[in-house]
Length: 428
Image 1 (cartoon, rainbow, N blue to C red):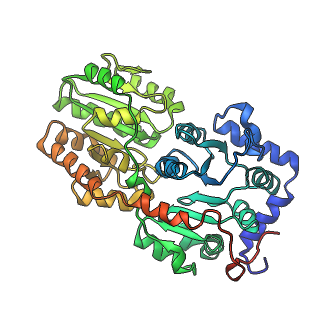
Image 2 (image 1 turned 90 degrees about the vertical axis):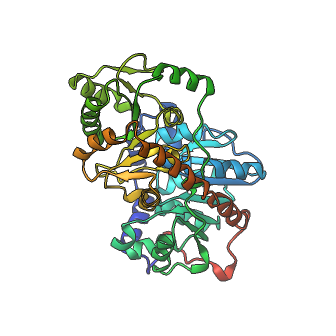
Image 3 (image 1 turned 180 degrees about the horizontal axis):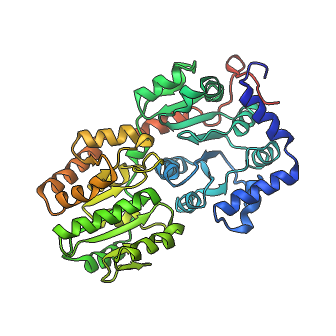
């Protein structure tokens, strides 16, 4: 404890001393912010809504939609091998995605307080705890480690915090028995902090190995019929910083391509009302709900439609790349042979975008004002077909990340740290 960074000691002490009423207030605030079902508030305090199943339990903590999507197939692999899987999420949208993994259990992640974490672990008693990408919570890690639960960090990506707070990052990462990194560069980042090299593997990016997002065949056929003959593009996982550029781009591109239609799918469907207002102000006809009708813009205001969208369009602008969000996962579109446009701010998936850009499957637009020209140039062009083919080829060359990650996890399931490898206690 005395050697731990002061910020970590402060967090652990504070999470233990937090008054119960403050803990409950915080849980309510988090739950409401996520528009979660009130009846499930207790999960934020570590109170389980369901019984722990018999047998080996693998717990996977995946903050939101992107993280859940990256581990969905891995979770199915683990269940196929006879293990039960619990997925915890912070967000409600992530929870909705987790509940689509047939056979997996879902609960909301408990607050990182001593009472909530201990209550959670007392009930679930996981045989393996996996944290996805970089959502590391000091109390969860410390308490799981104290109970000798094997810990794995899956699909680690680049992180500014490793250079900004190296001692804190090293203290958290040193607790893991296994780290799987997306790239060699990420592995170097982590081992440079003192994490043992034999614990850090590079199986590849789990997101690139994920199966295509699902889509109902009949619904897909119906939607294709509604869009038949029209030039079409989509903007997916957009945020407020993207949508003004998308609307302006569509208005510019339709001058060159009369009849051009747009599918607009905000990252958070609960923002659809604000997006609808912007579309109306721009004079665009739009439809919401399950079908586009004859509207120029189909505003997708519910979850679970992205697999359909990627199968309907040849060209997608991927949001989160013009504002501060850092971009989103491009592999979900690429695996379905979709050509991609994205803005310059893609730090969350920099290597993935760089790979697709270099292969000619994706193209960066340097600024928001460039998007309209890029869309106009690509619609109905030979280059668009070549980009889609390049995306499909890139994805055909990938796919080993998941089996390699699964093989690494097999050695941890049911394991306990041997005394000679015990990690020093830091939890107060």
